[in-house]
Length: 338
Image (cartoon, rainbow, N blue to C red; front, side, top):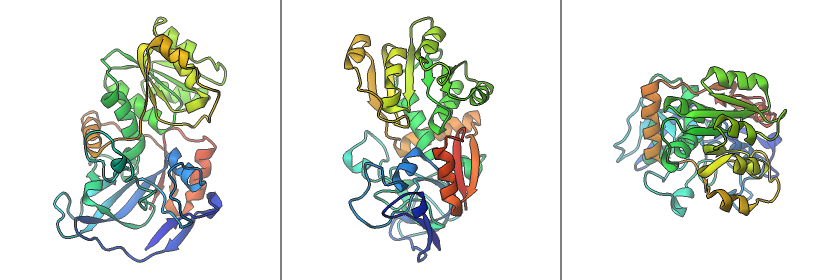
């Protein structure tokens, strides 16, 4: 079989397609023939050698946490799955339920566990879950990280009620899933982008209020205006240090800011007085458990929510796909197809 491989000195030019032996499932393991994988910003950091949890080794990594495939064979002791089942890979292979722990968060695909960027892969049966039948392979491949991160921020960590306001930064994978889930749950949404064209697409998907942060960097004012001066109940913060200052101006007193990314860079120093002044809560969100994933899939099935796949590349053209991500060309998700 063939596999993607990246090693030092890292970078897009170091992504290679290599030959590898066909894997064989062991006890309680499942062999999956991959159909599609989707890109996350974490993957771009990883292949660039900038990911904080990179292994302390000079060896190569197999990238990608998010994939969809078909079970081809099962090893002894497998009870959850059978050949022919269509499954998604769980971002954290050992986080089945409950609260996160160091052990659970140390089981992520791509690093330290070889990822889904290969034609055939063996996973623990616990690290896979069936996906809704109506989704395509490309759509199902987008669920494990971006969709689950949005789900957890909205429904596991925040205390929201229908009619509450969610502010979403940008139109990447997490934010577009957040828009779809919030709309299905009866939440009011405010979404930001640097592109009026992307904002129009978000409006067509149900966004209630729009803010172009390129023409108006003080996008917190748009959130305040949309909420009668009160502020958002939840902000899904994907920018990190580059946007947290605006988030603190946009959140209501006692509101919840879910920190899910750092795509806007380090930014300026954080003013802790703003956090004290409005009694807001900041919480880091690192994807979620398999139980959360399966709850999310029930909502997706019920509301027939279709993930937005904006660009598709052959899996052997991962470099071009990452270049598209780095250029911010996408709306929703970028997928590689086997």
